[in-house]
Picture 1 (cartoon, rainbow, N blue to C red):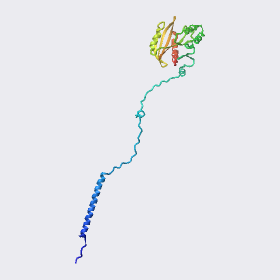
Picture 2: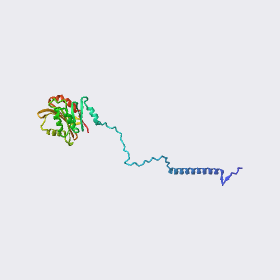
Picture 3: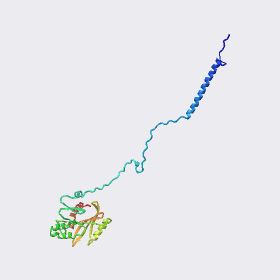
Picture 4: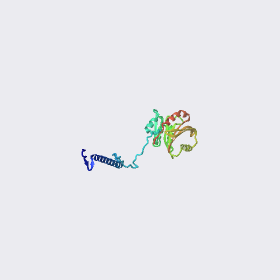
Length: 273
């Protein structure tokens, strides 16, 4: 006799087992579907994570007046600079002094050196003393003393050779200073200077040069003093509005022997302001 089979809610054990397996599959399917839906939703709403960074420093505003311009480094061009050197008066005179046997003569604004046998000096500031010193040399120099006393305006230096009394013409050196307009040319000044003479001199030589850093002209000419003819060397110098004339007078027979001394003396001439 066959045994009686157990049943659950009208179903056999086999049927119950099949139903449980189907139920488990259904639950798994539902769970899988729910996971997919949640994954899709989470992908569409995932927040963006920003990395934390330090804020850039804020510079205060710079006005146009204080803003430094950008500079471009460039190699400076080589420029030849000419530098003017101003020599003190004492140093300049010491440098130009010929040495032993020479004497310095000075007036306002100018200095000149001559051999020590010359006497005289500043007739601009010490005229009477110069006249007295010349007169003491003897009667042969009385005409020179009178000439200094009557010297025209502008004469600032007057020196004579104290050893030249035996010559009919005493070697003389004079300096004249005049102030005119600065636009007066040196040539204009020379023309007017020669035109003012009583007679037109015979020009033996004319030379342009530079002395004491100024435009200079040297004229050599013959001139009459009464019935005597002498040789004269004039140096004309223009210093802006100031004009200087340094004159050397001598017997024509002494010119060639005297010229080296004249040139040496003239190179000691110095102007000071």
